[in-house]
Amino acid sequence: MKLLVTGGAGFIGSAVIRHIIANTGDSVVNVDKLTYAGNLESLAEVSDSERYAFEQVDICDRNELERVFNEHQPDAVMHLAAESHVDRSIDGPAAFIETNIIGTYTLLEVTRSYWNNLDSKGKQAFRFHHISTDEVYGDLEGPVGLFTEETSYAPSSPYSASKASSDHLVRAWQRTYGLPTLITNCSNNYGPYHFPEKLIPLIILNALEGKALPVYGKGEQVRDWLYVEDHARALYKVVTEGQVGETYNIGGHNEMQNIEVVRTICALLDEMAPSQHSPYTNLITHVADRPGHDLRYAIDANKIERQLGWRPEETFESGIRKTVQWYLNNQEWCRRVQDGSYQRERLGVTTA
Image (cartoon, rainbow, N blue to C red; front, side):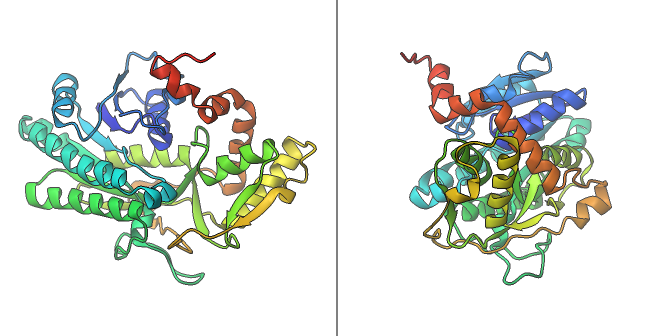
């Protein structure tokens, strides 16, 4: 099978591609615009594979997308390309509307045209898998209750509203045009190659540099943490075995308050990288809370376990230890992301 993966140079997309190349016989076409969050260095271990191809294309560019489909003739699409940082969506929502809504619409239309021209066997086998977030559901009040696939949408931020819109478009294209789509909504991911603006890598790298560890409000926001390699396995399972028209929630069964996550990281760094900054909890700094900050997300992932046999392999304890160790072992990757050299070299800009 040949899979076209949008956003394949991003955090989750690169994990999906590494998984496919390492663990299956399938081929991958990586379609990525290479925004600030797209880093081809995250794909170094698979970039020489004969089963991997890269196309630097914006999913809003219909002509280029049509060329990619015509040249590569994919058997399935895994759509991960998205603007995904909530704080950035609050400061500048336009990019989120453009990429997450207009980009998804454009990709759906190009895919529909391509799919309509396949023979009957190709049409039947084809899949369009849209990867979304649990943030479309809004938040849960109190310590009980879980998001299910039937939970009503109530997005809180420009980011989650744009993802909710893209989910609705995908369902409409399935119902109206018969395009064979699937949707997954995942909880918070963490693991290797995570862009340093996100909570877990930010805390690790700030601690190592002796910088403040910013925590919104009291840090009582609850998230369900999913190790990215577990997520990659789940996504491949859905695109290859999932039922057309279905939605699958993917969670890690690891609910924790943000302050607990930060303290856990500090304890691991005290053990694995003690320094003059230890104990690292001394660096925790509480900052003003984010506008409209959701309090609790929690995923009911029973459907994907029951129907497709997927469960996360990592607990939060095992996954966060692996994550901290990866960042300690890959300081050069982190440095190049932090100073922007991964982008400058890609653009042919040299630095003194």
